[in-house]
Image 1: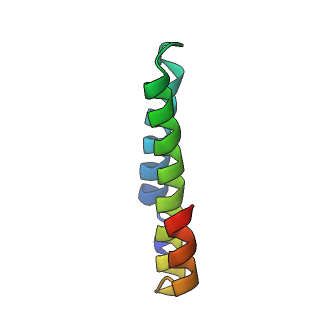
Image 2: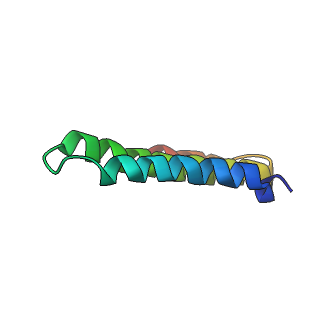
Length: 71
């Protein structure tokens, strides 16, 4: 199954680790860098959820599209 493909899982985890590293190594006064890392993590999570939904169901329902747009 596509969702069980280790390469996909590894890709998402690698991106997450890069974002976390950027956050951990940001200067304590660099609010913009930390905010960017936070938003990147949120976006990565949304992307993964969307990807999993598309692969699992084959489509994204209208209510999920509406909800995803506002989260």
